[in-house]
Length: 256
Ligand code: 0WD
Image 1 (cartoon, protein in one colour):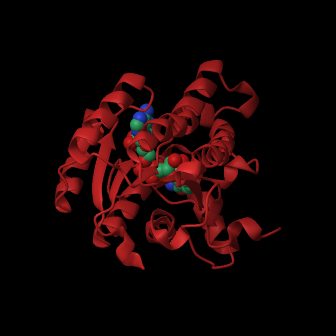
Image 2: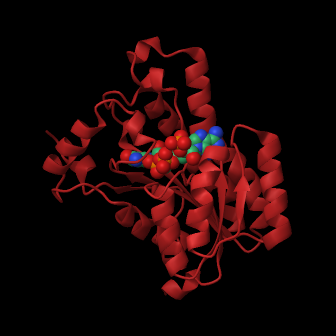
C-alpha cells in the first residue's frame, strides 16, 4: 500500500532546520519514494534548507514568503514548469510576534493579530487555491495545528486563535475541493522542541508536564507526526477529508 507514495510530487512549506516537523515528514516521504520540493521564507532559512534538501538529492528549493501573493504566484508558476502536476502539499508554517505570546492575551495588538492569522491560517487557503490547479488527478493537502485552538493554553494566545481559524479553513477547503478528489486534513501535534516552539514562553515546562500527563507517558516526536502524515498523503486515507487528527500521545483525551 505504501508504494502509493512512489514518484508522488509533494510540496513542503515550513522547513526551517533539521528539527522542523516538516523536515521529519520530508525525510519519511523521501524514504518512501516521493519526489519533493521545498520553500524558504528568507535568505537565513535558505542557507539551512539547501544542504538538507541536497542531503536527500533534492534540487527543488524555491523562495516563498506566504504573506506575498506575488511570491505564491511565482512559486506555483515555477512548480508548474518543473513538475506540471502536483499530488500533495505539506503546510507547516506559522508565525506570531514574540511579544504577543508574552503579553496578556487581552493586550494583543491589531497588527499582531493580523500577522498571526495571515501567516498561520490564511496562507493555507492561499496555497490550496493555487495548488488545486495543479492537482487534476486529485491530491492531498495537510497542515499542522495545535490543541491551543480548542483550549486556552497558557502563552499560546493569538496563535491559538490562528489555529482555530486554520482548522475551520481545513473544513471549508475540504468541502470546497472534495469534488475534485482533493482531500484537506490537519495533524494536531503535541509539543515538540523546534525553532517556532522556542518563541513560546515556558515551553520546557510544557514539555515536562506533557510527558508526565499524556497516556503514553512521553513526548511526541517528529517521527510520530511523519507516520500520520504518510497516512494522510498516501491512499491509506483515501476516504478521509476535513479531519483533525491528534498526534499527541493521547494528551488531549485526559481530564485533570
Ligand atoms: O510544538 C510544536 N513545535 C508544534 C508545532 C505543535 C503543534 C503544531 N506545530 C505547528 C506549528 O504551529 C507550525 O504550523 O507545526 C508547524 C511547524 O512548526 P515547527 O516545525 O514547530 O517550527 P519551525 O521549524 O520553526 O518551522 C516553522 C516555519 C518557520 O520557521 P521560523 O522559526 O523561522 O519562524 O514556518 C516558516 C518558517 O520557515 N515560516 C514561513 N514560511 C513562509 N512564509 C513564514 C512566512 N511568512 N513565517 C514562518
